[in-house]
Image 1 (spheres, rainbow, N blue to C red):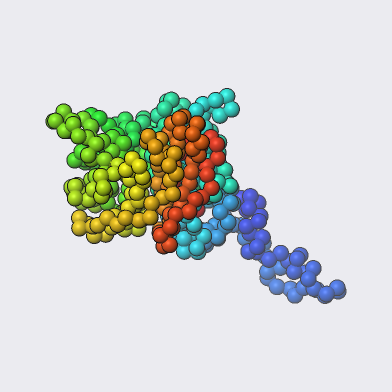
Image 2: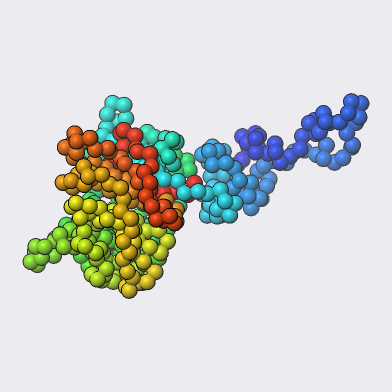
Amino acid sequence: MAETCNPRRLPWLIKSCIPDPRREAAKLPSGTRPPATATTTAASPSISSLPDDLLLEILSRVPQPSIPSLFLVCRRFALLLDSPSFYALRRSHGLLRPTLHALSLPSPSELFPASLMILSSSWDLPFGPIPIPIEIPDGSLAHARAVTLGRSIYLIGRGATLRFDAWTGAVSSRSPTLIPRKKFAAAAIGGRIYVAGGAARSSAVEEYDPDLDSWRIVSDAPRRRYGCVGATASGVFYVIGGLIVGSSLRAGRLDAHVWAGTMDTYEVETGVWGSRRAASVPGGGCVVGACGAGSHVYVLASHAVEVSFWRWDAGKGRRGDWLRLEPPPITAHLRLGGAARFCCSALGQDKIVALVHVSSDASRRRGAADGVVLVYDIVKGEWNRGPDLPVGFRRAALACVEC
């Protein structure tokens, strides 16, 4: 990548900004000379001569499909596009929109030895397969959690972490968590990622700094949970559901399943845990999916014969209440025998997306569809079925990015 910008690399960008004297002369009647002005003889300014603020303003208006090419022009362009100002300008111009991504790591094959399958929007703009720059241990990303930071999606698994840049389509490796985890809670708050649970011998909560590409332990959770899910709302990290494992069982708590509908909360700013035993999902259901939107946490709970949908008002703090919402349209053969796996993501502030995966071969033999996408409209309070995931996206994780 060049250190400085060559104006010939982006003729389409400067042609619309600098008038061409020959084109202006062609517009005049025959035999008429163009007026002699300084602009007809002055040399065209180089795009590299523009100040950063003006160049940033120009780049921020470029259509999204052209952004990946801009990163390759020169190092100066790449630095400007990576700056928070570029993101803020596109937001102010109304050029950002929430886009849903599905990420899946298929089993290695001769066709795709090590790749990440990625779909965006309504599954009509496939990015994948994208090669992975490192060797991923088999099964390390089988139950990975997808967390969004800015324009990047971090796929965090057991001993491996990948970063997918939704604007450029690049996949890179990142530092794994300090403690190997599986089926844990993860969420992004204040530009950092927090993970908890999924480790039988540790209750440590880790924080990831994307600028340093490093993890550090910031706290210990009040309970060791396995199979939990994470959500964030109003600056609070919610660790919800799962089973209690480790020392809790050795202390005589054999009823580990009773915690499957509870949640613990970690206030990132103060580093304080708050016990929310009274905030358990009503009805004793097992939480199978959760996400935050605005000041609310939305939860899917399984009750063996049905799936319920709830909203927790995080803005009310410990006095918050549960509100039962319209349940998702889950068919009977998906509910029987725990044969369904759920993944939830907020699509902006007005929609919740639930992805339903069939987790047993018996369910598939009964005709159950795999990769069912359900969309909940928060304003209308109703569910609709979206386009199903294509074949090859089993165990996909969902994440929303503003592009």
